[in-house]
Image 1 (cartoon, rainbow, N blue to C red):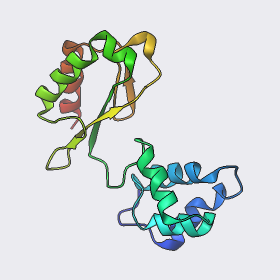
Image 2 (cartoon, rainbow, N blue to C red):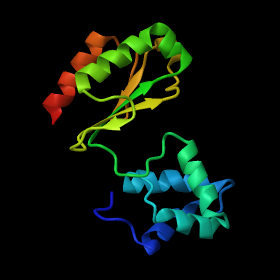
Image 3 (cartoon, helix red, strand yellow):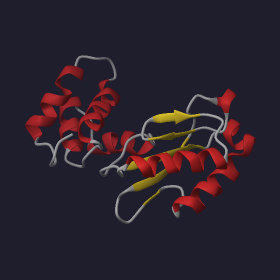
Image 4 (cartoon, rainbow, N blue to C red):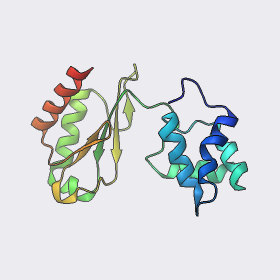
Length: 158
């Protein structure tokens, strides 16, 4: 990750390998977010210019996909699957429990930036619902009790 916002030259170097690929915008956005941690506003005009798109088109793609962030991520990220299978198997109960335990609502980040609670719309674990992801690690068949164990493990790793 960069310690500061990447410069135009750093962004260009980052997206250069993606330029010849078909439909390169998504690949470029992933490359930026993987390296920077999010897609900074300064990347939008660079991407628009390099791909001959409007800034609105680039911003539209960023805002359409829930995966892309426009600000630095929280230190700890909890992502709860909100797809039909997870909801059918007590996902709403699990979400309510997690909100109560973390004191965050879906879509919120703690004031100190230490934790965020985000909805996602399918982790691909429908046969093992409900599922969630903590800091990039997927967990299946999560119960409120199992979440409490995971939360304790998170707290001891800090």
